[in-house]
Structure formats: structure tokens, C-alpha cells
Amino acid sequence: MAEALFPYKPQDIKQCSFDDMNLQIGDRLELQRLPPGLNPRLFTRVIGYVPESLLVRTPLYKNLPANLQEGDRLYIRAFSGTRAFGFESRVQRLCIAPFLYMHLEVPAQVQCVEIRREERLPVKLLAQVKGVGDWQPVLMLDLAEGGSLVESSHPLGEAGSEVELKFSFPLEHLEQEVTLTVQGRLRTVGASQRREDGITVHRYGIEFKPLPGNEAVLLQNFLFKLLLDSQTKHG
Image (cartoon, one colour):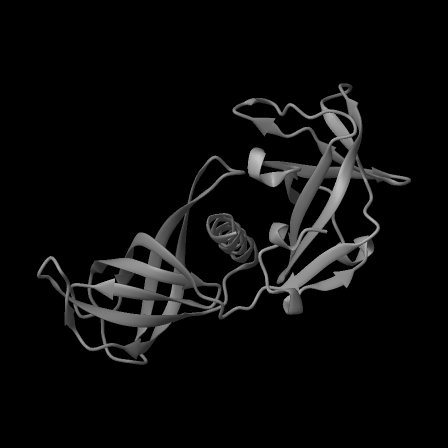
């Protein structure tokens, strides 16, 4: 299985079984026809199982059923809790009734990796932070499940201060932006510095408090997309 399809260091990737994923009806999957460099990422949901097959809805691409054929080889990625999974499969059968769906081959092996809560990925997202005063605009410079580094032209508080961070990000499978408001605490306060445009800014490290289940999954999905995009650019 091509390591480039799963953007983690080889030593972090473990082998597991299909059953270890514990996929449930309604779970979201990301599909990509091989070779990945020539094909877009698609999104679908699990609708059931039959012997030797995983049943999923036929994914859409630009609001039309994706141009997949029986026998096409796919790479599939999934999330479950704090773990990401990746495996190769094959389109066994395309069905049109009672709706468009597909039979996918159950893989012999699956790659899995723990998504580290502290793993920071570079971003440039406009956001807002609220401490003891009003909401203040900030620029997020990196993002992890457990926190973010932000840059602000206004002081936000002292280390240890409680804050709220509000930010939005796009998710392809929802075809819309998601907005999260995260409770957190200022953990690091950097010295002020002057940018090239002459504006003096302050940098703060914000540690997130645990998110509710659905919001945590949305953030994990976005972080995994950032990892995939980073792998595409550098690999």
C-alpha cells in the first residue's frame, strides 16, 4: 500500500483489521480513485454490510454521481474517535435501486494511526478571541486538536487567562463552512513584534478545552484534510 496515500511517518502507522474500524451506518468515508494525483477526493456514507462487501452511497462530484466503474481501485480514509484509517478497496458492483449505491471490497489489511492532540499544522485563518473584554480579531497561524497559535494587534490577556476562540473552516463533504467556538486558556504570551507592514502584533498560544463529540469530529476531519493537502504539496 502506498505510504504517500496516508500522510504520516511510517513508524507511526500500524496495521489493523477491518473490524477494528468499527464502522457504523451513517459514518462518513473519503474515497479517491487510484492513482490519487489524477482523481479528486469524494465523500460518501456507510449504509450497510453484506458478506464480503461494504455498502456505501454512490458519491457525488459537482452535484452529479461520480464517474466510477466496477473494478475501479480506490483508496479510502475514515475516522473513528482519535484514530484515522486508510485502506485500498475495489468497486465490486454499482447499483441504482432503490437509490444509487455501491458494493466495495472488504480490505485484507487496514492502516491506522493515532491523531496526536498536540500535532500542530500551519494555517492562516481569520478568527476572533474573547477574553474579559469584547471580541478581538486574530490570525490563527497553526491549529491542532488541542490548541492554536494566534497573532493579534491587541493584547488578549495574561498567561492563564480564560478565553473563547471563534473560527470557521470549509469542509468539502458538507460543501459549506463550519464555525466552532472553543473554550480555552492562554498558555504562552510572546513578546510583541513589528510586522513588515509596520503593525505591532502579539502572539499567544491557546490551549483548547475538550470539544463536544460532533465538534471534535468536525475539527479532526479538517485537520486530516490539512495533512492530506500538505502531503500533496510536498510529496
